[in-house]
Length: 517
Image (cartoon, rainbow, N blue to C red):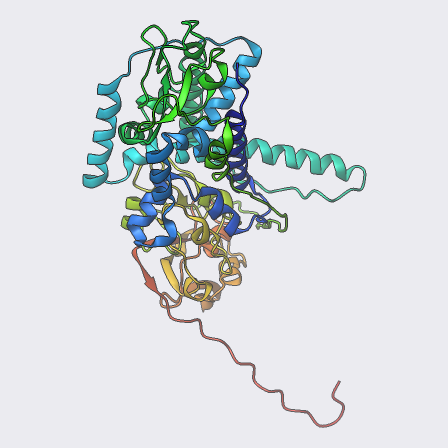
């Protein structure tokens, strides 16, 4: 039995990518640099491809590098770089530690896998991103981390902070968490449960049957230069390779490997006691095999794929104080167009580009970008929910890290003038009218002063200057009116450019005669 470095290198690279991507999603302090996040998600195939299509920029060619690696080494993406595939491997590894797992060869479900791929491609061209959103492995991993792991992580952080406070230690700050919708939570939990059960029972069945990326790579892998094969002269027929193959693609009876399903995990290579599993170039003689565990060439091929990643910590979240509301209003808020983040250009483009990985949800310091099931008008796409938060006037983090180009990079100056929506005021919902009380929280929090106070019938009411309003939602977020908001943001179908806010110049104070105080 061989114990070469190939399997260890694969595991190390996979763990590094899972850790880096998880850190990007779990950052609650806002301290992980955008450059780190972009590096962590650079090789994710679907987001990189969509971003390239959206921007036609060479800066987002991670998918091309993945294709080159595929043509040379086979489906190394699925075992080295895919976080969902790595998650499946971790589940299989844990189960093997608890109870010995024995896989067996099964025939490929080619009709199903290639039908899913074909339908996904047709849907992408004709109807949009819906199937990509549901099936993309990176986006599914992102939803699992954001919707399931992140709340647990925040709870542990807050528990630690509370515990340390009893000992007068304040090095860990508590985090104010805005709960996500129960519908998207249930959806993600169901996917997580089904995917976990599938991986426990059938290994990489999801990757080789349902995942469109895996099916596409299965087709391209026929052209791969290096492939696993069985040397029939060396094989003793022990069947160990078949028992450890998580892709169920090794037929030990016929000494054959279905390389279209092989994810290059090197389990079979390390388990073979006779050295009959070979990893060789298709044009090289069998006796001149290139072993991933032997020689300098094999080491260089896999060491070249290791990325060195690093992190640093910095930043906090804010809480809001609200006035007591004792009179409920009656006019419901009906939004016609969902609000999308600055840099997305508008709702139609956002729907056609977003894979719903929820990375923007995780990095948004104001927690205004929230997971949703259907609220955006498309399945699973995130929405800007101003009840949970508002778009920070000085922040453009989501535009810096979006892996699919659904939110394009935007300068802070441009962002401050991007009108993603316009605030609308419902007078009869305002607490100033219903309770005859002073409020004006909306005008106080408006960063551009598009919402300002006017006197009407001896009441100080808000008024919206739509020309300078950027639709950040600060007014809607702080509005205390219940159960319906008195001021809300109606999204712009296409983002517009607002006029710069008017800066009030201070008048010079004339010196008075006599004492100055």
